[in-house]
Amino acid sequence: MNTKKSLQPADLVVGPHLTEKATRLASDHRQYVFKVRSAASKTDVRRAIETLFGVQVARVTLLNQPGKTKRHGGRTGWRSGYKKAYVCLVPGQNLDLGGGVETP
Image (tube, rainbow, N blue to C red; front, side):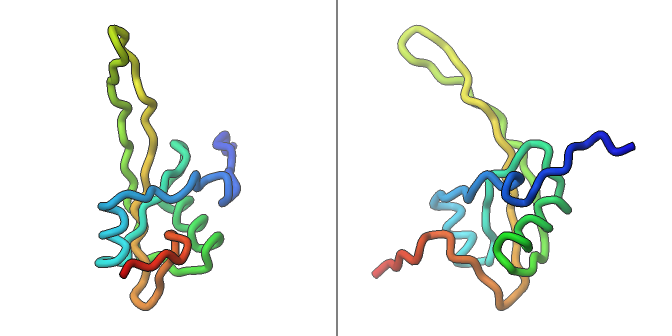
């Protein structure tokens, strides 16, 4: 019996991870970075991206980003960790995650 709760594609992908490195990967290598749920597998992420955006995925790489220790005054705390998915698309396909913003 499968005890793993199946997540819908919209619930699986938290959102895009937009940083300078992610923007450079998208423009140079057609590779996009998303924050995903910790229970996500590579096949789950592949199906979710193909369903949500209507593109073909060539490769998915997952990364568990651990939380960081942060200090505020004399107190020490933790930022929570998260899982990232690096999604590489087939040649000829792309995503517009920047909202159509063009650089001069």
